Image (cartoon, rainbow, N blue to C red; front, side):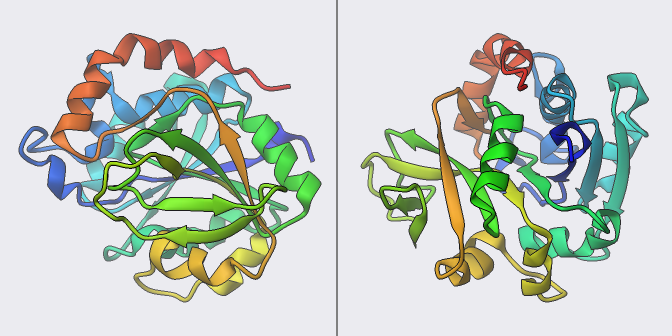
Length: 246
């Protein structure tokens, strides 16, 4: 299977409560960065690397996201919508979108409120080479306290997930971009479930690998980070087309 035929699941259904003070009437993925919705950066990044079949896992203010992007033709992609009947969490949203993933040998999953500059096709190929259950992109940050950290062995196999500490120490963090084999869907129960808290810690005995990425990383989960994204808007837009894959 060509990597360009891989489907991408975008998790865009969160409530975004911490950002409400500055983005009051729109879902977090539609928060404007450089006068365009943040989510458009992810769509353009996927499309520029040949990944054009997208599934939006929507929830909070879902109609605004569907109204903004429609079926994706304006951005050269095809978008299907998996609208959650209730807040399902990151894993629950993936499970609820299972009907869109029938027959897929693997699929991408991306958080809708963070952006990472990386070669997505390379990440997919790495996952296929390992043949494991999951491969996640990780980045090194100076302040890992609010994210929690990921620990790897010498083969970049994930050995531990550590909870947020609140300290200002550096570390490797989960960057919110994954490639999953379909077997992971069988490990996610229906209903509200978190990838980070409920699923990943249970997978440590499985073949879960990480790819260390060096590109620009930003999330917009807090007002301070959102303000930083505005400062980086030009760089983020350039990053959507820099890594073109193979």
